[in-house]
Length: 267
Ligand code: ADP
Ligand code: MG
Image (cartoon, rainbow, N blue to C red):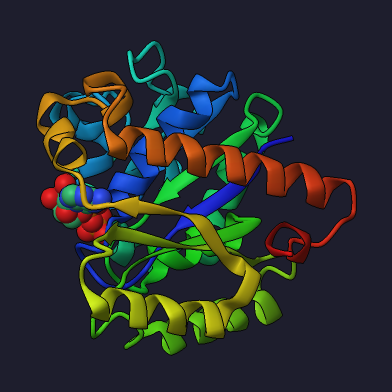
């Protein structure tokens, strides 16, 4: 049964898409069966996974609006090692169309049901906003991964995101929880980075991943070649960091399945 994880933060440029693509590739490299869903009309996760957003036979827009099944929209056989349901500009229309549809917050959740046995992990990349698309992602998910850049304004907006997750948890999806906080584009030479990082650990405790993602040029270059860093330069610090994150995520998941709490890893 797939574990569904939403990667979100309403701030743009914090590393959501980079995390979605590289975590998906790393999980796939450890032989997990992975599906990535691109929920951002910009289609960056689609392109970064090696699919052409302009050539999709069916996109997530059609899945959400009942014009295609999730199965029909699957892009398989990508060199990145995981399957994809892609997105492009069509998705901007979905937000408005969804408003008129029955069970509008649950469209994605319902669409994914037939695929749950086929994958170990389903990762959802999100637009930099908290809109009906994000609500669909949160309603469908078991957990949320929040990438954060350790800079001065990082914590701004985080309380509204935590508030939204809380509301969804109470009203729409009782199993939703914060899976982990991921420090991205980390530069330990900056003292501010360390201060913000300390604040995050204070606020979120053991939910902050031990793995930090360094600022690494390979992670920034790989998308223009339509591949995760693991394919572009498998020995780069960026690729190795995301492999380490995948390991941490798998260990946490296994421990949770066996009934232990995450707190044990930090002790
Ligand atoms: P988001 O999806 O949150 O908007 P992206 O993942 O697209 O953020 O990242 C924003 C920009 O920063 C992109 O150009 C990306 O290549 C770059 N980037 C992301 N993470 C890193 C990193 N760890 N090191 C260097 N560049 C990064
Ligand atoms: Mg993005």
